[in-house]
Image (cartoon, rainbow, N blue to C red; front, side, top):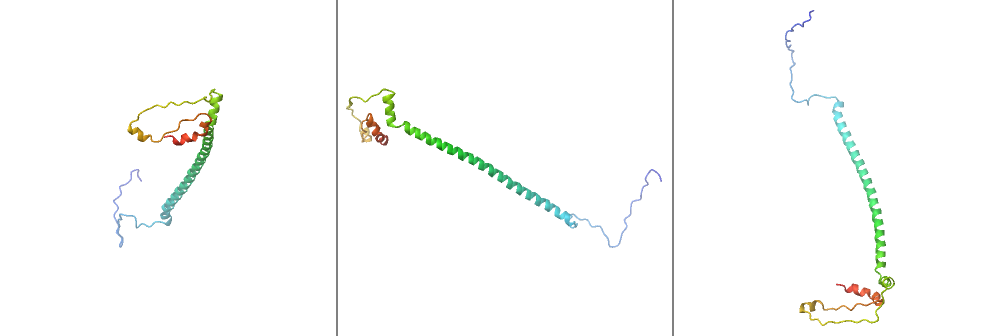
Length: 158
């Protein structure tokens, strides 16, 4: 034998009776084994199940985080409500007319006047102002009378 390959004669087709070559455009007619047909379906189902499990777990984590955040907000709201009530109580105490009068007498050295004089001025009002000021307010009281009738002025305030 030599190192060079010999040229082979082109192979001649041997015709066998009853056999012919069929060319197909699709592979639908090729029969596959059952394992190969089942594998893509199994992979797809596995991926879908994993995605659903991941989604459910993610939802549970988000719900748990939201519950913790909601609890912190509720605690904060309760603390602020308690603080608000304390401030309302302190405000009511500081606005008390008796406390204001005591402060004026003790700390500022104020006293009740011996007599009260009122000066009334004769002022002619235009007709438009007469209709709007049909009700008149009483003159302010002083001392303990002011403390007793403080609600009267609050109700009539414009």
